[in-house]
Amino acid sequence: MDTRLYVITGHAFYKGRSLEDVIAAAIRGGADCIQLREKDYTGRQLLEAGHVLRRLTREAGVNLIINDRIDVAKAVDADGVHLGQGDLPIEVAREILGAGKIVGVSTHNVEEALAAERAGADYIGLGPMKPTQTKLDTDPVVGPAGVLAVRRAVQLPIVAIGGIKAEDTAEIIRNGANSVAVISAVVGAEDVETAARVIRGIVDRERGNRA
Image (cartoon, rainbow, N blue to C red; front, side, top):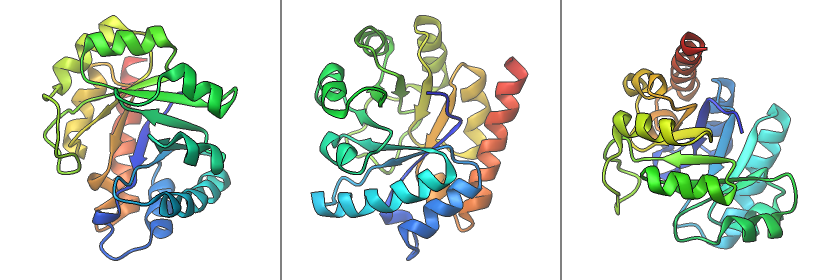
């Protein structure tokens, strides 16, 4: 999966705006992958949100990934699922979702990245880059130096995640990440579309420089 700006939902940051309005603006700004991640939602709420996002992403031609919930991913015909270290194995997720679906895995170090690659992940989420307000049980900070170490060890696409703002993006991409995943930096911005466009522009520039 080749993505550049991976935007994750987070309803606590919407400032009273709707999921549809926020994510539509993020897509207009250059988000090319959307992940549905709402830890406090019921299964029914996730399903409803998933259908909204599936329509938006399909119309825009961008990927929809569901965090953790393989059942929801299958129900809304998402493009894939993102698994944590404690979730079902990759091969089980593929068996449930069917051929051609994307499976990403959260990793925090070289060892986990190598294990994900051996297991057949399509990409790895690597983080956290910085302390983050969206995950209270945060693992030790990986940082840009950790990106470089993982890039030297694996061939998989790396999606860097965790506390990333626009000003952090260039160094992360220069160190070998393919993409950055953001929540509050985009969906919590006063102008979601512009915030997305700024970060996407930095990713595009830095990836172009290393091509």
